[in-house]
Length: 306
Image 1 (cartoon, rainbow, N blue to C red):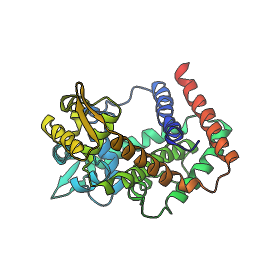
Image 2: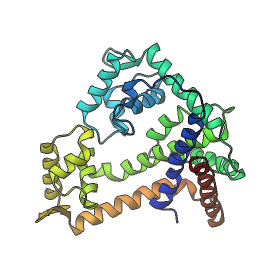
Image 3: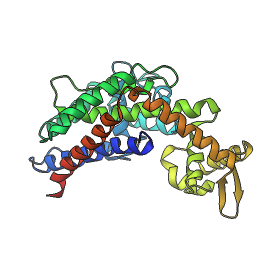
C-alpha cells in the first residue's frame, strides 16, 4: 500500500485545497490585481511565484542560483539566473552576488500568505481533518529525524515556512502536503544522484521510460521551460545510450532492460526512504490515514462542485 500511488493520494490534497480556496476567493470582493510577473509561467517550478516561495524558505538567507538548484535540480543555471534577474528588475530582490528580499518583495510575499491563510481558515473541514493533522504532524516530525541518505535538505527548508501554531488546521495540513513533497524530493534525489548523472539527464531518462520523450525534439517540446536546448537533450540521450540504459530505434529512444532495472531500483529506494518514518504505524493506522484523506478530499471538492 505504501508506494508511489499512496504518495500521489497525499499530494491530491494540494489540488483539492487549491480548488476550495478558489471557491472562497470567488465569494470575496474583487481583490487587487495579481502582479503580472506572478502569472508568468504559473504552476511551474521555474517561475517567479515559486522562486518567491523559495525566498520564504531561505529567509533570512539570500537566494542564489546554486541554492535554488539543489532542489530545482532539473532546471538549467541560465533559466534560474534569468528569472531571478527578472524579479530583481521588479525591485523584489537586491542583487549583490546573491538575491536578497527587498521590502517590496516581502510585501508581495506577506500579501500572498495573508490571503492564503484567510481562505484556508474559512474552510469547513470534517472531523477527519483533525485526525489527519495529528498523523501528518507526527510523520513529518519523524521524517525530520531521517538519516543521510536520504537527508532532509528540502524538508528542512520547506518547514521554514510552516504556519504558526495558532493558524487553522487547514493551513497546517496544506503545509504538511508541501512538506511531504519536499521530503519525497530528498528521497528521490538520494536514489538517483549516486549514479552520477546530471538532473536534466535523469529527467530525460524518465521521459524516455514513459515513452513521452523518445527524441531530443520531443524532450525539448516537453521541457523547454527548464532552460535546456535541443542539443542539450541530444547529448543527454547520447549519455543514456553510452550507459547502456537506452537504445535508439525507428521511433527514437527506448529503455533497455538495464535501464528499466536502474529506474525500478531508484523508485524502490525512493519509496523505502520516504516511508521509513511510517514504520511504526500499523496496517490499520495506515488505512485510517487513507480513509481520512479520501474524506477530507471529498469535503474540499464539494464547494467547487456547488
